[in-house]
Image (cartoon, rainbow, N blue to C red; front, side, top):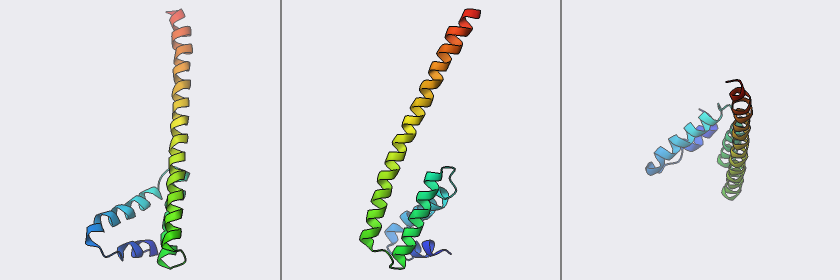
Length: 107
């Protein structure tokens, strides 16, 4: 097992077993994601958790890093939404130009 998994498994509260499993699955899945951003954040979270377990990082430092990751993730989400909106707009404009303006002339 990895140090990350060992540390997460060491959490004893039975009420948090589901959350522990979900966290391990989240990181494992994110590390395989096609997005470089998502993979990097998963690697960071795993590294920071190991540092926390080895006491190379304080709980407060860990919390600060995770909060910063949360903000970066929100900004990335906004960037992707903006990019998707721009792509949809280009598609709509292309349809208007090619189909409505050009193809309709031929029909």
